[in-house]
Image (tube, rainbow, N blue to C red; front, top):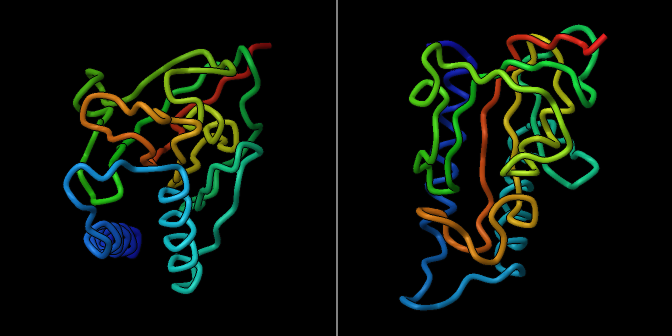
Length: 168
């Protein structure tokens, strides 16, 4: 098993532990404050484990797993990524391998997509980069959540930038 896979396994284990440490009573609504307390504790644990965590301008936390080369995307550039998205307990919410025929999503980089925080963190990737991003609900599904994603829930994405072609 590679070092990257071991780190990913440890991360998923931590997510499961964190999610199970503070059970919520049935019907107890999640709040922004609860989410940020959990997220703060989560980031502290990762830092204590030696992870180098950075943040985007929207306060999306991310860890560079592999550095890329070349320019970072700007509006109008063409990007091709693969990704795996999951909840803090480790439950998978989406996987590019299950959505796109070749497992890669190609798109024109622009300021907003459905999950604004995902797009924001992609702006910090260049060709070949691999990052894990922790997107708080303010830039994901917010106070309402969506199918399978509760309100005020941080999303985690593991993303690889396969191609980044500047607009011209």
